[in-house]
Image (cartoon, rainbow, N blue to C red; front, side, top):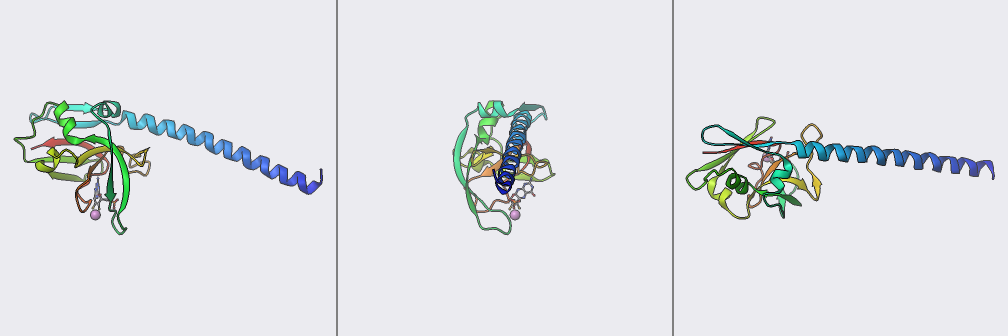
Length: 173
Ligand SMILES: Nc1nc2c(c(=O)[nH]1)N[C@H]1C(S)=C(S)[C@@H](COP(=O)(O)O)O[C@H]1N2
Ligand SMILES: [Mo]
């Protein structure tokens, strides 16, 4: 083999090894993120301030659905995404908290942000969701650069300032 060919083969070998290592490390990351997401807890406060907590598999078991919604990030034009999650009201039903005699649902986030959502929107069959996947991928936590692990999406809202990233807990009032 000519020396120049040996050099090229050598470079290809180095590149292939580098790609394999990257793929391997990334697989470990995916597993770690999946584990962290499943361990993420979402908490419901009842009227006596008692808590009912859910991990991700428990939330999924309440009735996972896929739907499309427009994400309107500040300073960017809206982009349509497919989200995976459950209707927020299903979590309230599971917690045996009646919504019909309440006026708002409050959702609180890890960064101190909180939103207050009109009960009419929450009772709607296709509007207020607690989501954990966007375009088929788990939504990462704030520390890992994502909007999750849980995010409240209000599908029918014209603006997304009442959507709640990094959602931790909820209470109906
Ligand atoms: N936890 C949390 N949720 C939040 C916010 C926030 O600062 N913290 N900002 C809101 C606003 S003003 C918008 S426009 C949407 C989209 O935020 P983004 O522009 O960071 O994507 O999230 C909403 N939800
Ligand atoms: Mo915003």
